[in-house]
Length: 86
Image (cartoon, rainbow, N blue to C red):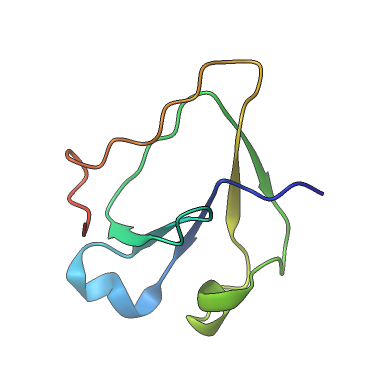
């Protein structure tokens, strides 16, 4: 099974910050918190109890895995409009 490019999960302990959605770039290991994120031209996978690493330690049992769609042009998500930590 191929590795995802991004992993997205909800972190309840960050709910009070207004940015509880965590987005992990698997290749660079950068983790960002946001209130929304949009991906275009991607394939996704979600399986119950598939969390690992920091997502699992944060209490997430299930994460959304984002894969680059090889058939279409892929763009990294744009962060400047989403209030993300950089």
